[in-house]
Image 1 (spheres, one colour):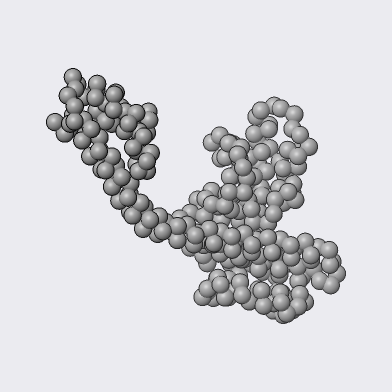
Image 2: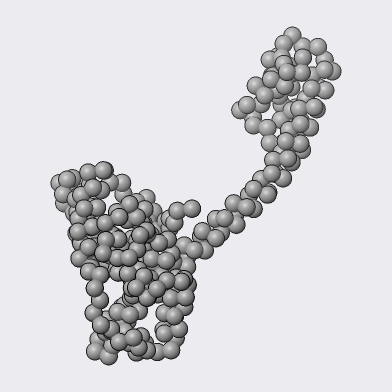
Length: 282
């Protein structure tokens, strides 16, 4: 099942020319993140305290078995994906406004920039919206040891980890900025968990529907068979000129009996259904 968290009601539709433009622009911006890393003290996360260190270790374990190099490159990809998503959304809006010639609202002006999207959307939301577009852009993997895109939940977890690292690097000099990064870390992690729960619930409901649907279908078919037999008994009790005449005159009684036993015969199709039963019984 593809990951799809519906975060925007009635999202705007964009034509192919706008999407192509936005994708090229977003890719160029995303690839500004190089693969080489600055030296970071391994214990810098300790600046956030025990609970945040445990949180980050939990993310590392959840992502699974991978080498330190793979994990580092996953963090690079998470940064690129997040940057791509903000620039892609902004370019979609700015290009559409440009082609329409309409005067943008103040909100539209803000959302036509990556910084504006970053301000108005919680961290990870646009990744969830645009990940199907992102995974079709293999250039995003260049320079990394990754050969394919991870699942959306993994990329959001990696983004949460990276945001926590960024928060640690802000301390002790910029507490306000550190708190902003931690808020982003929480948002990305919550979105990852939300999506994982949706996927789990989807498969659980699918299995439940398969079981209940079979039983429900058997019950519905039994009710219909009972109604059909009752109708044919009514038909055989009298003489009729045609199946249509019988169906027309029996319809009100059949509908009443249908409601009584829960057969749910549709009033709009009742006469036609009765006539078919009669013809096939002849």
